[in-house]
Length: 115
Image (cartoon, rainbow, N blue to C red; front, side, top):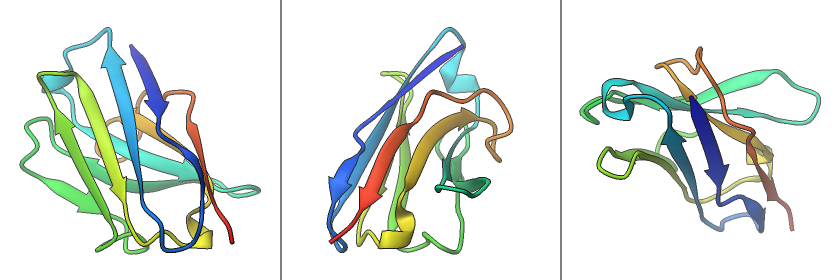
């Protein structure tokens, strides 16, 4: 199992970012996937999940209405569109297997929201 996140960066409050996760080494189209994040000094927080076929999505209350999870099973790719970013969204973002990010995780991509 290999998961490689990309797309992080330094942005200002109110900006948008799109994170990507390239998956390999397993049958991506059969696996539910999630995004999770870890802010400095805090534990891992589940952010969003999507079912293997893409028909079911879930979001943490803190990101509902601002973030959108999606996947492209033909490309073995997972995405997280993040709009209206806030300073409290600053964290390392991980893609992970499982609906609650309970499985394997990638190395993460840093998202910093600061004015």
